[in-house]
Length: 369
Image (cartoon, rainbow, N blue to C red; front, side, top):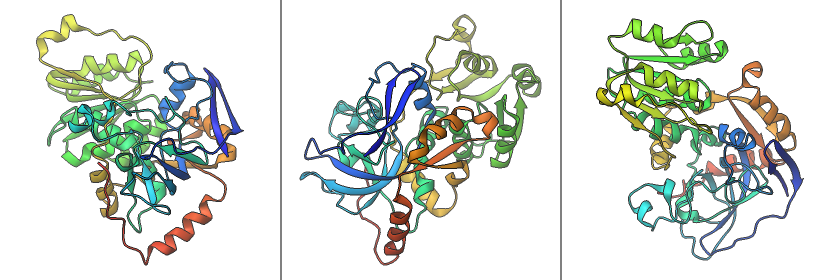
C-alpha cells in the first residue's frame, strides 16, 4: 500500500509499505477513505516532536471503512464506516476512567507519532472499541475528518479549558485551522465579542465570515495596544492557537485579572512567562492534549447543522499528490489554505456506493467513549 513515511526532520516520502496486520484482538484494520494534514504534522517535520522515529507513517486524522476486526472488538464489524479519533484509548486504565483519554496508559496520541498513522491506504487502530466512532447514516464523511482532531482540540483545550461564558470578551491569536475551530465552537457559549488576531488578511476576513466580531491584522496594528484600549482591562479569555513565543506573549499581555489563557498551539521552544507580573492577577493558564471526550457531542451538532466543519476545507488532493498537499498546507498564506482533504485512489467510488447503501441501513448503534 502507499503511505507517507517520515524520514527525519525535513524528510518525508510517499512509498510502498506492507498493509498493517492486527497485532492484538482489540485492533481493527481500517481502509482510509479520507485523511488530512495537521499543523502537528508540520511540527514533526520541523523537529518539534523528537519522539517520532524515521520510518513512521504520518497522520492521525481521517475516516474509513472497517476491513477487519480482532476477536475482542465488540462495537464494530467489517464494512462499518468510522471516524478515526486522533487519540487511542483502552478505556480501562486510571486516566481513561477519569475521561482523560489523552493520557491513556496504553494509548493517547500515538497515531502518526509512536505508531504508523493515517496518511496511508490502511491503518491499524488499537483499542478499536474506544478509538473509533461510528458514522451515522447520511452525514458528510469528508466534513467529519475535522472531528478527528482540530474541532475537539479547539473545543476542549481552548474553549472549555478557557471557561468561555456568555457575555465574555475573548481573543483568539492565530486564525489557522485550529484557531478557526476555536472560533466556531466558542460560539456555543455566546461570547459578547470575539477578537481574531493574525498576520494573514485573507484568513482574518474568513474569520469574520465565520463569526469573529473584530479582526486585528497584527502586521499593521499592535494587538496588545488595540485590545487594551478597547476593553476595560483586557479579555476574559485569550486562546493561543499558533505555538510560537510571540503569540503566547500577546496572550499573557491581553488577559484581564481573573481571566484565562488557554494554549492550544504546539510549542517547540521555550516562552517567556511574565510570572512576576501575572502572579497577583489571579489568572488561569492551561495547556493540554485533547482527550476527544466531546467528539460524540460535536458529531450531533454537525448532524443538526449547528456546526459546519466542512467550511474549513479549502483544498482536495489524491494520496498520490500528498507531497504537493504538504507544500500547499505549509504555504497556507499564499495558497489561501485552511484544511486539505486527501483521498486514496478508489476511495471516492467506494464512498459514493456506501452512501447509497446507507439509505436503507440504520446507523450503527455503538458509540465509542
